[in-house]
Image (tube, rainbow, N blue to C red; front, top):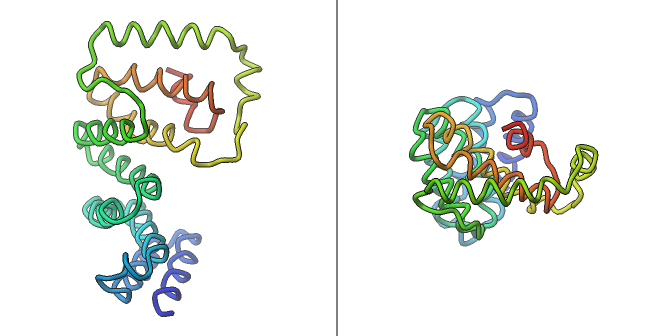
Length: 204
């Protein structure tokens, strides 16, 4: 019960943008659950850690973001870690740890069954550009707008949110992954529906 009360308090303070108080209650809740929380109270533990990651990110505390995120990544099923991984990638980007951010982002995409080459060549980029152009040519601007949230399955957008989270690092590092990620975001959005995170790829 103490952990649940702390979760509720943390969520309330986070809604009020009082992130210091939110982080305090989330961390208290985690402490109450103890080291066996992932075995006995997995969902509650996940929510507390997600809150701790989110509030730590809002406070600009990159070390704590990483600390709490690694707990989730190490214990929760992969599909339950996407939200935390998204925040962790943004934290790495804002900390100018761009190569680490890109490497981790590509690894997540490969787990999501995106076949991103580990060392993109010019041929890879040109082929991706050509296939994206062919697909995009079948859609007018009005058609693309009509694709906004065509599915109610929020998990369908997990890949785009991950790509959006580390796209800034591909730009900052002038990485050869930058065009590949933009093309993948466009193709995925056309096939599965457009979400707010899709915007940057169409602008590119």
